[in-house]
Image 1 (cartoon, helix red, strand yellow):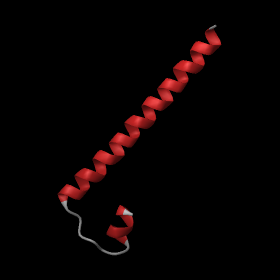
Image 2: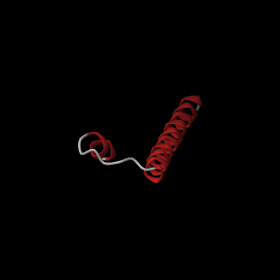
Image 3: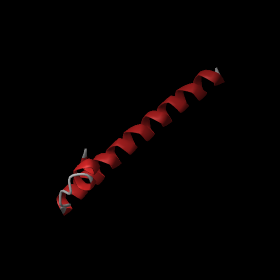
Length: 49
């Protein structure tokens, strides 16, 4: 939606919006990374015994 607003509708980009966008994507990346690491650890632990 953010990208549609910028590129399709020509909405001006403000610094606060860019910061919010970056924070949301960073949080999503961290959440995903932690889930991947946890599942990997559990899989390795179940294979070890």
